[in-house]
Image 1 (tube, rainbow, N blue to C red):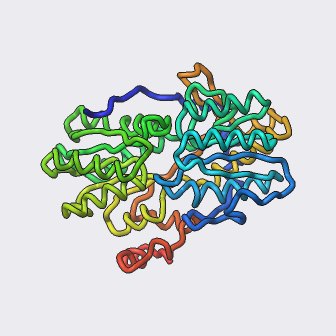
Image 2 (image 1 turned 45 degrees about the vertical axis):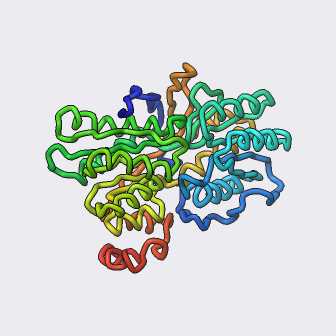
Image 3 (image 1 turned 60 degrees about the horizontal axis):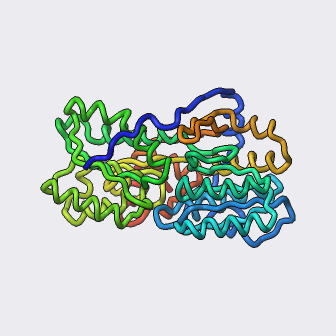
Length: 381
């Protein structure tokens, strides 16, 4: 059964000040974007800098290299630049561990918490405990629906999905009735819903007109790449081995899908989307196995979260509001959340160099025997 469109999702209210967001973007520099680290203190915990304590909990490592490779070092660097002493931990996909880590941080006397939750329910429970102790909470990357967090920092996630839809349509071209399989993110992750909603702004009219044919849409619990690959293979074989395009919600799922396509001799013949501009995803694009990804300059997200945390630690809500100049509606909580929403970028083979030029992935990570010719043609070195 195909996934149903659950509606428009939280509406973005661009209430403010392009100038304020422009300033935020201007100050964001370039960082490392590899699983090996980047930033100046990749450990992120256990190194006391004597500043105001801030607790950061990241969700997992299995579905994407971004959390440990990009977010952790970039958050550490940005928070230290704001004079804070960050304790950055990863819950490894375990809701109980997420809660336990939060309890420890609250007990240790953190003045602010930044959480990228596994689920809205788990994130909300942690935020409620923190708030009860007078600790402000920032939802990082994922908004907790029905939550109580003071602020939200992320990318425009419906725009991410729209870019994935545009990339799929662009890659497929004019082939009539092209068959599409959608492999989506976790049903408990509000971002996955936003990605899907954004995709459908582009794809639903194509399905309705018959320009594209939706074979099946399936959400993948916990963004599990292995499950995503297995699910895709079941759908593919059930459709007689026929597919022209695959909406993969991120690069991890895309990689699992490409592995299945290769098994059937279809890799490079099927348009596959992605997200996060990981080294593996970019290399797959250079090989021709993946058509596109979405680049989200994570250092901008980390710096925005750090500026918010720095202001909140001082009790300066006016300064925090000056950073979070947009709002996102939380329909479950019937509230508007003050937000920073950054702009994602569509990356295809011709624009991979943008990511390496920005310093998020090194050329050495994506240029190998299989991709060297493409790197040479594109000037990636």
